Image 1 (cartoon, rainbow, N blue to C red):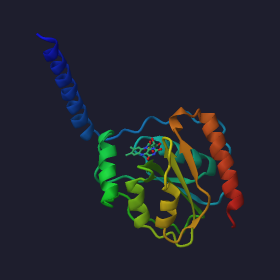
Image 2: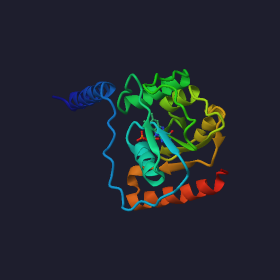
Image 3: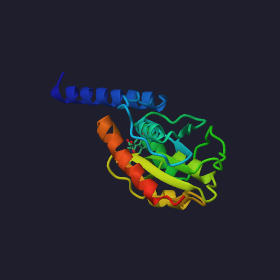
Image 4: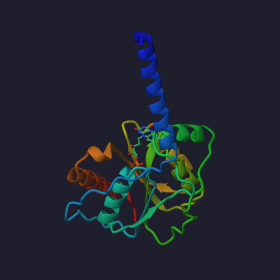
Length: 209
Ligand SMILES: Cc1cc2nc3c(=O)[nH]c(=O)nc-3n(C[C@H](O)[C@H](O)[C@H](O)COP(=O)(O)O)c2cc1C
């Protein structure tokens, strides 16, 4: 076999493997990574009756939401889509296309009654420099009726217009300073709790009850 054919063979093999990987990932639902240990005792913050609504494809936003829940004694509510999204890397492509077409997914969670809560934390991953599609679905179907809403996001480096878009979409929310968490899985749990706790103290000061 000549060198030319060996190179063509190797390239063909790479293309086949890439195609198998893409097809496999298209039909695989993202699985959230396992939650890490919580340091004990977690700092406590009394912000009244708290609801923590979040969407998480990979577990980062879920982890932050759970830590907020543990510190505030809040109720957790995870948003799930009726049709699961494909696993990455197809998720990147799908999210790009759907964001471009304003094609928001249908959620399993129906409209919520926020009246019994004092503070509502709302968390989402950043997708393509903005709010993730499931969270856009949730926001477009919600009316916060003057409730205090605290946005947060997790991201891999750049949150883009996340907070501007969130503020634009969160109808009738009384927004409090949000927080972004970068590369959550690489932050050790005590440092993550410390960051969340400092932010919750700032939120507490900002809220006028
Ligand atoms: C479709 C998609 C698009 C993303 N776009 C961005 C981005 O624009 N900026 C960024 O910093 N991270 C981006 N990321 C990384 C995620 O925001 C980050 O890993 C986040 O913590 C994931 O949260 P989750 O594990 O709760 O799903 C993207 C991830 C996905 C799946």
